[in-house]
Amino acid sequence: MIIVMKRYAPKHEVEGVCDRLQENGFQIHLSEGIERTIVGGIGERTNEIVDLLLTMPGVENVVPIVQPFKLASKEFKKEPTIIKVASNFIGDGSLQIMAGPCAVEGRDKFIEIAKLVKDAGATMLRGGAFKPRTSPYSFQGLEIEGLEILKEASQITGLPVVTEVMDPRMIEVTAEYVDILQVGARNMQNFFLLRELGKINKPVLLKRGPSATIEEWIMAAEYIISSGNPEVILCERGIRTFETYTRNTLDLSAVPLIKDLTHLPIIVDPSHGTGKWKLVKPMALAAIGAGCDGLMVEVHQKPSEALSDGPQSLTPENFADLASKANALKNALA
Ligand code: PEP
Ligand code: MN
Image (cartoon, rainbow, N blue to C red; front, side, top):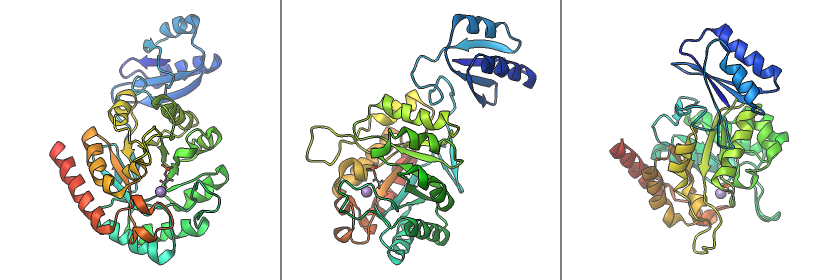
């Protein structure tokens, strides 16, 4: 439930409410807004505790949150969550474009593509150091060496970096090297990983699982937030359907739906979402039309030689065209 405090309720009244909730076994999440403080109480709501809270000084109202997700919900927090990454903001109405190869394949190659995507309009770099491959015989990523390369590319270009972390044991080291930690689609319901990511103070980009409903996806975000990290960025990357012409079916209705249900920013990955480079630009533009806060796009110098996901990777030239049209469309819609 959420306890809405009266406007400018003094600190000691807010603390009184928190103490009472804790005594009754509730977990507390404070949201100190411009107008007023909202106290989120996660626990078992009984009529007795609601009545008790209503009598406490400073309490204006007690509102049950009907959704299964609480802290991610719009009911809990009306203002959109804006996440600052270096000097970029995700969720403030701007368009963030994260670009780079599927995997970091080597130092020189990555530094080169990082400079190319920056010149073409990328605002952040992407690249996998730990790759979740369907086959154990496929390229698995450069791991720690890949993280070092990502950091160097970030320093050279001045762009922040996002990379996937698959194993809780790798969270600490990954967080030392990159700006945003990505949870891949296959790990969306790895609850232990989500909980551990809730303990760090870096943003988490949470991809939608290939077979996850919107509710399951938001509940996964709830795991991270309720473990202490409110900086969650959702990423729609396509879901598995009966269609075989595309790798996944990109569910763009998720964008306005997420905006309606939650306060979290959402970006779209049309590369994994379609699996086909020719579909990436039109779906990226459609995603902007749907209201997303950013894009994640795979780009490779020579897609035909990429160690992973070549068929869905754009050339730097095609990416430059996408980025300029994406920004023009975003401005036109502003
Ligand atoms: C990726 O972004 O490199 C990736 C593996 O994506 P997904 O988890 O969406 O398949
Ligand atoms: Mn990929």
